[in-house]
Image (tube, rainbow, N blue to C red; front, side, top):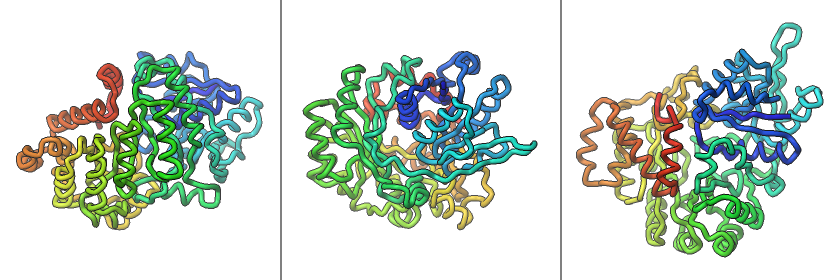
Length: 475
């Protein structure tokens, strides 16, 4: 069987590479087409002649997938499956759409069973994790199956299939190698999917899981030998948890066998002097850390971070003293946000003196705790149309707020004020202006700067990706 994965923008998707690797391990074919990497996207879909078409979607990009599937259905009779966060939390997407099957949660075992049953022309209506739509007696019936157990032994999964993107040299030639050492996050931020996924999988296996040290090192040795990589990006939500039992011994072996600069995500409450020094000693070039809000009430009571500003400031101090570059993430436009609290977050980042301060606008994704919080308090319409979500959290927020114009302008100018604090008084006055193209351009330039300095993506790779990333920052 041949599975064709489709995506809009030219970025590697770790989840899709895992699915492809799992299917190939069991003898099936997989291919990938990127719309913004093709001159004749639909012509290439037709030429591929797949047995199954697959999309992986977050909320916002799902509208593109639905429109794309509808066009394909006009010239090709092939089943279409959608997986990812959007159908996991909003399986209703299967209704009144060209999507035939949706996958909730982990997809490796479900998609393998689906492909094998399609190949043998057996019924697919009782596969765990799948919702399957069938026409019976002139009516559409959706078979909603329960979740199976989590894959607890991540070592049993094959190495991510980077060759899935072999068609696109601008991806295959990238020198920065992305991977992940585990699945699941132990924390319960209200704006994140993790809390809801934990609740969904209750009683179905250990949620926070990690590969063995030897398994990760084996992959990185393979990647180093087969690709001209110059740096590694660990994509784990919280790479630094379990320092003594996993991270420290991993770093020692990493330095000995890999010895490439790497970047990773950290959490302020886990950072101390010893951990920061160890990261730098064993090859860490830069870290990414979520601040979210500089207002303790919003951060803890609304966003569920359970972090104080002192913890964040102490973590930044340890990381800076160790000689690490620091990129931080912020979210503004949250329920109960005011112009004063948004400015408080901005000023807090300026005082921290980090290398790059990324700022996004809140997206209350379906079935997250923050979505219900916003609806209960009137910041989001109870019948809010999910199709109104932007495909990027850098564009807008559906949260209803006073001073929304100014808050969006803060988001656009945020890092400029952090990098050049002497500009802050001027920028604070400029946010009173209407939202405009000039502010959008400033944000894009700052975003590009972070790609170079934090992710260590080369100018060549950035230009190649940027030319194909149409609409990433646009409505």
